[in-house]
Length: 363
Image (tube, rainbow, N blue to C red; front, side):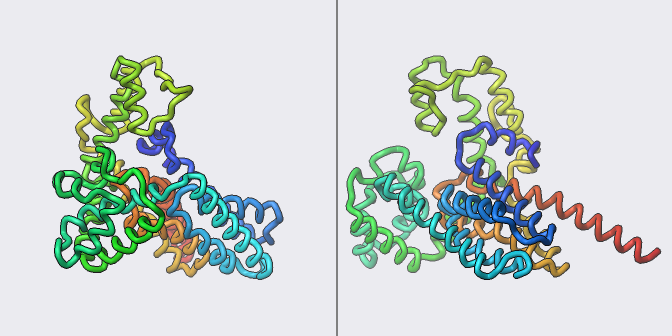
């Protein structure tokens, strides 16, 4: 899986999702190897487990569920590998670390805008569907945080497009206003669940790679970033697309044309960045999701409960991302993509091993 084109391309990006995926893969490998050795967990392994749990629980917001995953997996390990006292201690340390760092991070950020952005895509569609009279109170509350006129005046734009256009989120709003906004948003979801789910499904398929338009735009923007000769223009585009800067200026590649060719090749696009036939084969997250599910089914059929729980633990983030993804970006499912294709390799090996065992029995 490390040689798959999306993996290679994203390895050169500064997104947190890339390192998160490798941390999660390391967590899975550690848990599986510790289980197979059937030896009591050493202090070093316990410390590594807590560190990985804290990193996974705080590196990206959807990883918060590791507060529950860690104690569940430790309990499944069995008392011969780790005592109940150690399970409680390690679970408490992991949870405390995740909560403390999350709290410190929220204080450091100093605003709720990051979590607010995750609601803008569905909120935009809900506001358009809401009844101006019956839902007037809820709309009025939301208008204290976001400018509803932007939604009405630009019906062709989704929440993320409105956000980057500017003027959509009010410059200053209180925490009370934000809290009231979230409650009003939740009530609109309850009143119009079909609108919310329809929007979430659309975002998922756009981000999954099965509908290539969104990913095409990202690959195009990445490939053409340095093709602007003016340094100021390059830096402006870099700021817009979250590309890392060095000392206020982007590190200019020695071969711009070669870089663009590499991006297009890994993205399976032509010179105009139009997706080729192989694009949906490699740039989709549905296939590795299916591999994850199949591996869990095979492990459950073999009564390997702990291994099935480890793999299923990775997949637990899929509904979380589905419900909270702030945009249609492949990177949100990058961890699922990497671990899913690793699951495919394991699945092939397991089936090969089972076939070999069956053949020996016949002999």
